[in-house]
Length: 232
Image (cartoon, rainbow, N blue to C red):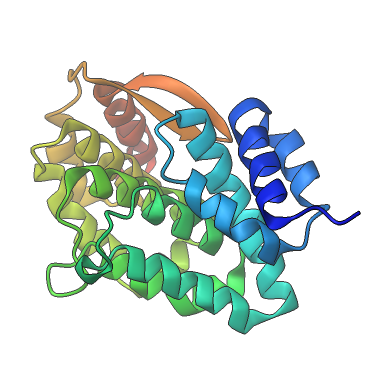
């Protein structure tokens, strides 16, 4: 007997809340990707960090599968992300920059088309995100994409638009911007990054599919270590 869409949503949300990522991805691979989208959209804005980040990673894998099957269907998901960050949508778009970036990290074709949009969320003359909480997600997303598609980000001058975020009043935005700039090896950022080496603000960082507690200063020191080879 086929499982209803409501039943699928319940199963997926339970998985995202309770299971480890490998189990989540293995279970989701059994479903057509289009059946997973609505539960994942619900989950990326979850208040539970485990649920949210499982959903972000699962969204990337799911939308990549969808793009391989039908690129236009995946573009519709991208447009849905963009709409959720639009003031006219009536929503906030929690989790959206992270999920969008993960999709671009997981699928080269989508990255070729939509990296410029992700970068535009940093630009005051683009689709600028004003809320610091959304900027945190965007800084994480730029850093995630820098791990796998740095050249595409360079094409759209991402580092140029990252630099002003080192002046953010939000220490987590600053830390995640510093991390991304370190990954890009942007040497002109080093002096400004150094100012925050002793910041003890703690927060949760999702990296390598794991959540860990870090400090702003820790990420800043890691960024400086990444810049060391080019600083000489």
